[in-house]
Image (cartoon, rainbow, N blue to C red; front, side, top):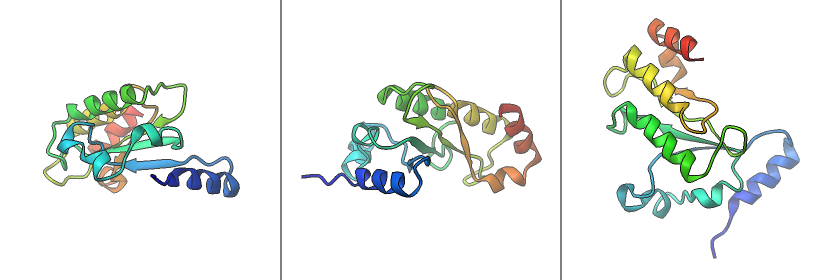
Length: 148
């Protein structure tokens, strides 16, 4: 029998902070990557989690994962489609995209592409890793203001 800890979190949250949302930062691997390692090793069963989690935040750090910037949009579209997520219902999708310059430099254009890619599909928000990486770069601040 698999223990469903998500219901424990939900009941505690509703008792302590009834209006709060239950969010999950998670690995963005799809079903096929690494022979199903996301579910098999990490235990991230999206079908089970979508019944409890209010907000999914896939950490789509393209450069850190050796991916091209367009992968962010592809991944978010796949994720929203898999969970049949729309903009007007729960769960919500608020991805976290990479602004941090490691590895390499995330250019102004690349940052804009991943921010917009994070807003694809049924996503209703996007966050940045890290806010400091944005705050220390005037070009990234300008991109963030333009996209937001």
